[in-house]
Image 1 (tube, one colour):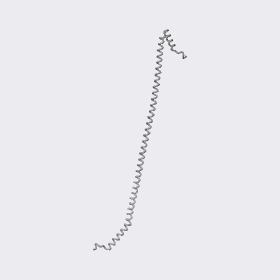
Image 2: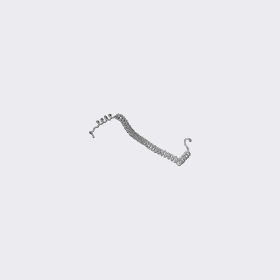
Image 3: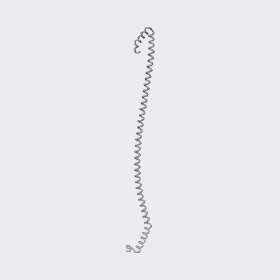
Image 4: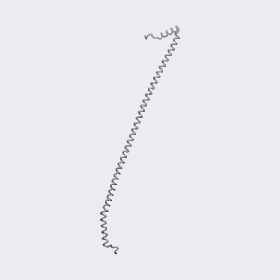
Length: 166
């Protein structure tokens, strides 16, 4: 039976060694190990809090970036719209100026043509009058070279003259 029942001395020394080992481990091992575990636990909790804060900040930054992007798109659309309006205004103004300029040039051309026409007509009249006078002069010289022709022409002119108006 000695194998199944331990001797009192063995139980005493085993208990004493176990208690000493328990005290030594409690004093030197369990304190630092539990402190290291608590430090590690607090470090993990701080990392999780920091990660949560970083995630929230990232969400805020993402929201801010989307807001800025939307504002930039709106501003770009506004600038493009203003540029289109400005371009249309400039084109309309240029067309109006071109139409006005062409109307002025057309009016000047018509005036120049009319002036040239009047000048040509006046020159033609002068030439016609000059030719008529030359022809009449030649005819009169030929006809009036004889005395009876002169008397007949004079009588005709006197007959046409109205003396009542004098």
